[in-house]
Image (tube, rainbow, N blue to C red; front, side, top):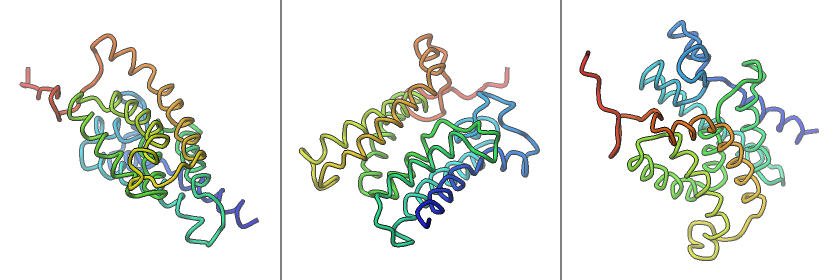
Length: 213
Protein backbone atom coordinates (compact mmCIF):
# COMPACT_ATOMS: atom_id res chain seq x y z
CA UNK A 1 0.00 0.00 0.00
CA UNK A 2 2.84 2.38 0.87
CA UNK A 3 4.53 1.71 -2.46
CA UNK A 4 1.29 2.29 -4.37
CA UNK A 5 0.66 5.58 -2.57
CA UNK A 6 4.18 6.82 -3.28
CA UNK A 7 3.92 5.83 -6.95
CA UNK A 8 0.71 7.85 -7.08
CA UNK A 9 2.55 10.75 -5.44
CA UNK A 10 5.29 10.43 -8.06
CA UNK A 11 2.65 10.68 -10.78
CA UNK A 12 1.10 13.77 -9.18
CA UNK A 13 4.54 15.38 -8.87
CA UNK A 14 5.20 14.73 -12.53
CA UNK A 15 1.77 16.08 -13.43
CA UNK A 16 2.51 19.57 -12.12
CA UNK A 17 2.22 21.66 -15.34
CA UNK A 18 4.62 24.38 -14.27
CA UNK A 19 4.66 26.14 -17.63
CA UNK A 20 0.88 26.30 -17.82
CA UNK A 21 0.43 27.48 -14.24
CA UNK A 22 3.19 30.10 -14.34
CA UNK A 23 1.88 31.41 -17.66
CA UNK A 24 -1.67 31.74 -16.36
CA UNK A 25 -0.82 33.14 -12.92
CA UNK A 26 1.94 35.62 -13.79
CA UNK A 27 1.45 36.38 -17.49
CA UNK A 28 -2.26 35.75 -18.02
CA UNK A 29 -1.35 33.49 -20.93
CA UNK A 30 -1.90 29.82 -21.62
CA UNK A 31 1.34 28.86 -23.35
CA UNK A 32 -0.49 25.99 -25.04
CA UNK A 33 -2.12 28.64 -27.24
CA UNK A 34 1.21 30.03 -28.48
CA UNK A 35 4.34 28.88 -30.26
CA UNK A 36 4.61 25.12 -30.48
CA UNK A 37 1.73 24.65 -28.06
CA UNK A 38 4.05 22.77 -25.71
CA UNK A 39 3.90 23.06 -21.93
CA UNK A 40 7.59 22.64 -21.23
CA UNK A 41 10.78 24.64 -20.97
CA UNK A 42 11.44 25.45 -24.63
CA UNK A 43 8.01 26.92 -25.35
CA UNK A 44 8.07 28.78 -22.03
CA UNK A 45 11.37 30.42 -22.97
CA UNK A 46 9.94 31.35 -26.35
CA UNK A 47 6.62 32.75 -25.10
CA UNK A 48 7.23 33.97 -21.55
CA UNK A 49 10.93 34.82 -21.60
CA UNK A 50 14.13 33.62 -19.94
CA UNK A 51 13.23 34.07 -16.24
CA UNK A 52 10.03 32.07 -16.60
CA UNK A 53 11.83 29.52 -18.77
CA UNK A 54 14.51 28.90 -16.16
CA UNK A 55 11.90 28.54 -13.41
CA UNK A 56 9.89 26.04 -15.44
CA UNK A 57 13.04 24.10 -16.28
CA UNK A 58 14.02 23.96 -12.61
CA UNK A 59 10.57 22.78 -11.52
CA UNK A 60 10.29 20.16 -14.27
CA UNK A 61 13.80 18.90 -13.49
CA UNK A 62 13.36 18.78 -9.72
CA UNK A 63 9.96 17.10 -9.78
CA UNK A 64 11.64 14.18 -11.57
CA UNK A 65 14.45 14.22 -9.03
CA UNK A 66 12.14 14.31 -6.03
CA UNK A 67 9.98 11.50 -7.39
CA UNK A 68 13.05 9.35 -7.99
CA UNK A 69 14.23 9.97 -4.43
CA UNK A 70 10.91 8.91 -2.84
CA UNK A 71 12.03 5.31 -2.14
CA UNK A 72 15.13 6.59 -0.34
CA UNK A 73 13.18 9.22 1.60
CA UNK A 74 10.61 6.67 2.77
CA UNK A 75 13.03 3.73 3.09
CA UNK A 76 11.52 1.50 0.43
CA UNK A 77 13.55 -1.37 -1.00
CA UNK A 78 12.57 -0.76 -4.60
CA UNK A 79 14.45 0.56 -7.62
CA UNK A 80 13.97 4.37 -7.67
CA UNK A 81 13.83 4.36 -11.47
CA UNK A 82 10.25 3.10 -11.32
CA UNK A 83 9.26 6.27 -9.46
CA UNK A 84 11.18 8.48 -11.86
CA UNK A 85 9.49 6.80 -14.82
CA UNK A 86 6.06 7.34 -13.27
CA UNK A 87 6.89 11.03 -12.78
CA UNK A 88 7.84 11.28 -16.46
CA UNK A 89 4.54 9.65 -17.37
CA UNK A 90 2.84 12.27 -15.20
CA UNK A 91 4.71 15.02 -17.02
CA UNK A 92 3.66 13.74 -20.44
CA UNK A 93 0.10 12.84 -19.38
CA UNK A 94 -0.65 15.32 -16.58
CA UNK A 95 -3.94 14.96 -14.78
CA UNK A 96 -3.79 18.67 -13.93
CA UNK A 97 -3.59 19.76 -17.59
CA UNK A 98 -6.02 17.55 -19.47
CA UNK A 99 -3.46 14.77 -19.98
CA UNK A 100 -1.59 16.90 -22.53
CA UNK A 101 1.94 17.51 -21.34
CA UNK A 102 5.52 18.10 -22.34
CA UNK A 103 8.15 16.17 -24.25
CA UNK A 104 9.73 14.61 -21.15
CA UNK A 105 13.27 15.94 -21.54
CA UNK A 106 13.68 18.00 -18.34
CA UNK A 107 11.82 15.54 -16.12
CA UNK A 108 13.81 12.63 -17.56
CA UNK A 109 16.98 14.56 -16.73
CA UNK A 110 15.64 15.05 -13.22
CA UNK A 111 15.18 11.30 -12.93
CA UNK A 112 18.86 10.84 -13.82
CA UNK A 113 19.86 13.44 -11.24
CA UNK A 114 17.93 11.59 -8.54
CA UNK A 115 19.33 8.22 -9.59
CA UNK A 116 22.98 9.14 -10.15
CA UNK A 117 24.14 12.77 -9.86
CA UNK A 118 27.51 11.93 -11.43
CA UNK A 119 25.86 10.32 -14.46
CA UNK A 120 23.54 13.31 -14.71
CA UNK A 121 26.41 15.82 -14.87
CA UNK A 122 28.26 13.61 -17.35
CA UNK A 123 25.14 13.70 -19.55
CA UNK A 124 24.69 17.44 -18.99
CA UNK A 125 28.18 18.14 -20.35
CA UNK A 126 27.28 16.28 -23.55
CA UNK A 127 23.97 18.17 -23.78
CA UNK A 128 25.67 21.57 -23.47
CA UNK A 129 28.35 20.71 -26.02
CA UNK A 130 25.78 19.58 -28.59
CA UNK A 131 23.58 22.60 -27.87
CA UNK A 132 26.58 24.88 -28.45
CA UNK A 133 27.29 23.18 -31.77
CA UNK A 134 23.72 22.99 -33.08
CA UNK A 135 21.94 25.88 -31.29
CA UNK A 136 18.83 23.68 -31.48
CA UNK A 137 17.16 22.35 -28.34
CA UNK A 138 15.25 19.72 -30.30
CA UNK A 139 18.29 18.18 -31.99
CA UNK A 140 20.24 18.37 -28.74
CA UNK A 141 17.46 16.63 -26.80
CA UNK A 142 17.24 13.78 -29.31
CA UNK A 143 20.99 13.25 -29.57
CA UNK A 144 21.41 13.47 -25.80
CA UNK A 145 18.70 10.88 -25.19
CA UNK A 146 20.42 8.49 -27.60
CA UNK A 147 23.80 9.23 -26.02
CA UNK A 148 22.49 8.57 -22.49
CA UNK A 149 20.96 5.25 -23.51
CA UNK A 150 24.18 4.07 -25.16
CA UNK A 151 26.17 5.30 -22.16
CA UNK A 152 24.17 3.09 -19.78
CA UNK A 153 25.58 0.12 -21.71
CA UNK A 154 29.12 1.32 -22.43
CA UNK A 155 30.13 3.32 -19.35
CA UNK A 156 30.34 0.36 -16.94
CA UNK A 157 32.86 -1.13 -19.38
CA UNK A 158 34.92 1.88 -20.46
CA UNK A 159 34.44 4.37 -17.60
CA UNK A 160 33.08 2.66 -14.46
CA UNK A 161 33.93 5.69 -12.32
CA UNK A 162 30.83 7.35 -13.80
CA UNK A 163 28.54 4.32 -13.83
CA UNK A 164 30.06 1.43 -11.88
CA UNK A 165 27.79 -1.41 -13.02
CA UNK A 166 25.20 -2.36 -15.58
CA UNK A 167 21.63 -1.68 -14.59
CA UNK A 168 19.44 -3.09 -17.32
CA UNK A 169 16.38 -1.38 -15.89
CA UNK A 170 18.18 1.95 -16.39
CA UNK A 171 18.95 0.99 -19.98
CA UNK A 172 15.36 -0.10 -20.58
CA UNK A 173 13.90 3.07 -19.07
CA UNK A 174 16.30 5.25 -21.08
CA UNK A 175 15.45 3.34 -24.26
CA UNK A 176 11.72 3.84 -23.65
CA UNK A 177 12.19 7.54 -22.96
CA UNK A 178 14.49 7.99 -25.97
CA UNK A 179 11.88 6.41 -28.22
CA UNK A 180 9.21 8.69 -26.78
CA UNK A 181 11.40 11.81 -27.07
CA UNK A 182 12.12 11.04 -30.72
CA UNK A 183 8.41 10.45 -31.37
CA UNK A 184 7.41 13.73 -29.71
CA UNK A 185 10.03 15.60 -31.75
CA UNK A 186 8.95 14.20 -35.12
CA UNK A 187 7.75 17.63 -36.32
CA UNK A 188 11.02 19.15 -35.17
CA UNK A 189 12.93 16.48 -37.09
CA UNK A 190 11.07 17.43 -40.25
CA UNK A 191 11.87 21.12 -39.68
CA UNK A 192 15.54 20.23 -39.12
CA UNK A 193 15.53 18.43 -42.48
CA UNK A 194 13.91 21.47 -44.11
CA UNK A 195 16.32 23.88 -42.44
CA UNK A 196 13.50 25.74 -40.68
CA UNK A 197 13.91 24.55 -37.10
CA UNK A 198 13.95 27.20 -34.36
CA UNK A 199 17.35 28.07 -32.95
CA UNK A 200 18.34 29.55 -29.62
CA UNK A 201 20.52 32.63 -29.15
CA UNK A 202 23.47 30.50 -28.01
CA UNK A 203 26.21 28.59 -29.77
CA UNK A 204 27.85 28.37 -33.15
CA UNK A 205 24.61 28.52 -35.13
CA UNK A 206 22.68 30.81 -32.83
CA UNK A 207 19.65 32.80 -33.86
CA UNK A 208 20.58 36.31 -34.84
CA UNK A 209 18.86 39.08 -32.85
CA UNK A 210 16.11 40.95 -34.64
CA UNK A 211 17.13 44.32 -36.07
CA UNK A 212 13.65 45.69 -35.52
CA UNK A 213 12.59 45.56 -39.20
